[in-house]
Image (tube, rainbow, N blue to C red; front, side, top):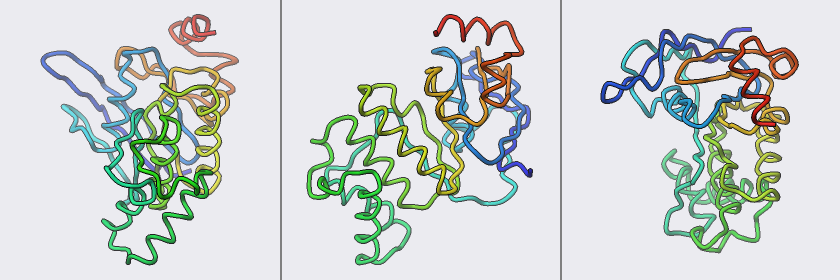
Length: 227
């Protein structure tokens, strides 16, 4: 299967500190979760993939142009209604007002929050804001969706709702690349795991194989300690 994305000897150094070092891998279809302890460089690697950071070394190679979107751990909400937040991205794409209102409402409905259309987004709960952010991204019909620990600050109920939505986005055909340090979440959502520690990729394996038979002692220790 042809890769959607290649990283070639990718590295990032800031103030003399290596944050990501010599990462070479290929990412294909499905759901890829970047797993590792806090401080491993997961968020930095995700931002390098998405192009928000410029690498100090190596290359991020997209074989063809793909529509991308990204959702952060703490989403930024405009001072506007939930519906207007979703419409904004569609407006930037040049979609006419009537069509973007219709598409935004459909996206808000897909994440289970049509009743919040007229509410100020910043007055919504953390879980609701994250679902609005997912709707905003989903409305753009991205081919690749980057997610940076999207449930890290949420309660269990909100986390389950966000995981459900991520699963539906993936089922609709969007490639998911997501960071987490949550083993249960990785088991539920991932097709493959990229295990990162101290800025270096130690494993890239199918999720079942990663948990059943990790290839490195570092991954074995991480799995044991996080259980």
